[in-house]
Length: 109
Image (tube, rainbow, N blue to C red):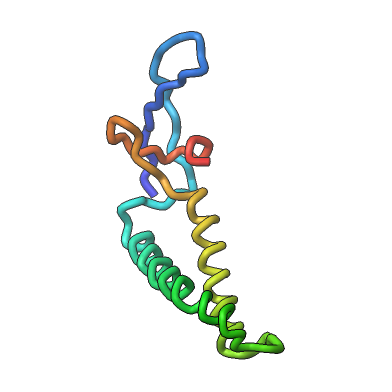
């Protein structure tokens, strides 16, 4: 991983200047292929959850929930991906107002 200098405006200091920040070790590029594919998976799983969750609750498909049924396993997989999306959000860099990529972990969180 290439280390780059990242200049960030520090609004909390008395001096109005640009501070030099080092690149964070763990970050995910918002335009990277991993995040694009992961967002597509989240989109598909969201559509599945929007369609099948109301049907499952309205018609009580499972009277006694079985942990190893296809429906319960799919719900577990969907919950795992949604939780992963939440965690990945803490490591995904973002663009600031002037289209500057922020990759400092302290500023991302």
